[in-house]
Length: 453
Image 1 (tube, rainbow, N blue to C red):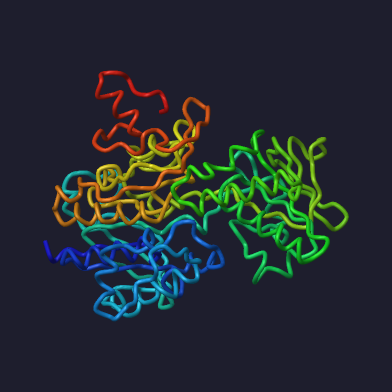
Image 2: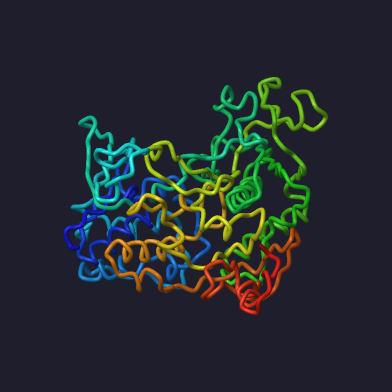
């Protein structure tokens, strides 16, 4: 068992945590990171303050690995930025512990299969090692492993502006005026956005945070104007649970944003499903409905904060069991599908929900959520703790839940949002098919469920 080699794709927070758990179990991790150094994706949003404090952002196995190095654990109640997460936790973990020997940077995975087996061949498949192909500065390389945990994330696969899931017509041709995710509008990108009219498309935390930063920039540089493009018709849905959110900083983000909207600091365009992008006297015309339709705005820049999607292209020779809509593992998808149930907080889950028809292969971290938006870093830590226990053969530890998640204070039941402490009764504790405590109670009583999923 100790001879097992576990390939981990991605050296972000969850990938490094997975490697720490693999080491602690006496197995050998090999971490393949596409970027030039660990936490490459986090470096793209290092200006952003997390809405979870340090106590939720440090994996326990990683902390145990760091302890002998003289590492000083941060104040558990302080809120780090992405940059502080890198400097005070991820860089020491990647460079001052035995993980430094396991991480291969500038190593982009291009394909994974079973040695000697294509996707259609079954007999003897489980005994064949995984074959991982990746590119580095030396050219193509091949690695074999007994198990694979893909935690490569979704940051570099943002959703496009088009409301139908495709790039809007004209989007690719106008890439120079478009940014994705959450650019540093008050810092490194200040010159790009200061004094400009900037449209932000999206309703998640990235969109809200970017709009708040633009309002602050407007207070410093005249001529800066923020426009919120919202695909839905009810802006209040984006405000979150406020004081009912057990992550205070997350609740405060929604409350701050709601106040700015109420004060008229942000121009709001609702029901805005982007279809076309075109030029307009040296600026960008953003249209909904049709190229020349009645609903359009003109801006200097567009920031698309519509979430992310997983890159599954290098997994085409593996037998995956994915939900066709969310692109998450089939057992996990019902718990996170925003069409059905949106407590924002998903009950802890692990190897059981994340396994596929390819034994020994797991999706974890943000990538495991597919297109769903509610992932928390601490959820990823619980995922990989369970997965590594499963790989090591410790089924009891793999099935055990070792995490209690803070609730958002907002739930969706049958399309109607409710807010309040103990929303949905909290996460389910035992029943794997239950999406929340209320649903679990109902099923134990012989009913179909509580009606929220």
